[in-house]
Amino acid sequence: MSKLSLSAAIIWLVVLLPAVHACSRILWTKYSNSFVMSGRSMDWVFSFDDYLYVVPRGIPMDGGMGKGSARWTSKYGSVVSSMSGWSSKHGFDFVRDGGTDGINEKGLAVHVLLLEATEYPPPDKDIPGVSYLRWARYLLDNFATVAEAVEGTKKVHILSVAIMGHVLGAHVAIEDSNGDSAIFEIIEGKLHVYHDKKAVVMTNDPPYDQQLKLLRRYEGFGGDLPLPGSTSSEDRFVRLSYYLPYLPKPADDTEAVASVQSLMMNAAVPFGAPYGDDVYPTWWTSYSDLTNGVYYFNWVKNPFLIWVELKNLDFSAAEVLVLNPRDPRLLGEVSALFTEVGTREAQKAAVPEMHSTTLSVFGCVSAIFVCSIFAVAIHQMLVKRTAGGGRMRTSHLNPEESPLLT
Image (cartoon, rainbow, N blue to C red; front, top):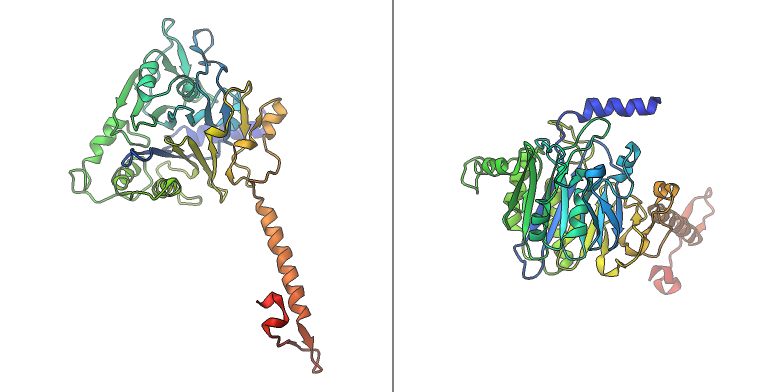
């Protein structure tokens, strides 16, 4: 084993084996006659080197559990966020494994979050299996509504796979364009389904039913405790539940995204914070406009929001497409920038060429620098040297004498 691999294993064992509370999800349906929108965050001790995928219809897929796997062909096209940049380094498929978030063309959104209380069932030869690393794909590929997804999930077993000897516990929140919602959790090997339009907030441990009980201790929910302020899973659940009903009616879709983003930032963890209680920084956030079919994504280390309008995608294509959303050049609508996954070398790079809808941060800095030099040169042209010791004085010009001053 190389020194680098050994270091990674040590970090995994020392840092990740304790509970790592991460991620939040909300669903905003108060104005469902105008729009339905959800938001989620991804918090972790390190970056998963996430990618975005466009998955067309007609793509063969399986549950990733060998002979006992569920098998299907994607019925609906989707945009999927995946931690494949990291998981593929540990033996998992770059395209099929690692989905954590996404939206399909029918307006079903899926969010996979950590739940340490998860206990997956053992494989059952009579029930098709789906790895938790393919759970998101199973839902997005096959179902148009929450009701369909609930029934479909009952027909399979979500099973564990180990990454470097460790199994990540997961629970899933889903919602559709009608404002329906459900939360899936696997406790002591049994699937628990909370199918309820009121299931609009999910964070991490403890399980959802216990979170609801804890919520009743706080002001506004029947208790007398003040609103909590830490980054723990329990406190994030309370704050999101409290503030969500107070979001004002937005004037348009843009304002709706901004409103959900403002609330998600209330549950985010900044870089450099004095981390405690196994809480780690927010790496990215996503926002799903289920009414208009738009998927927004913000890599927190980049200053720009990007999005994909699903109407601009060709879901009848034959190949899965990929985009590196961590590229700091990206800005705005990026559906035209996805490329074929292709070879392993392309998978590793997966960085698009410059495009008219992208913006180079370094390019901006360079442009500002050049403009500054130009401005200084123009200024010096307007300065005349006096006779006294080479000192400079500014020329006194009327605005009419120079268009630069108008």
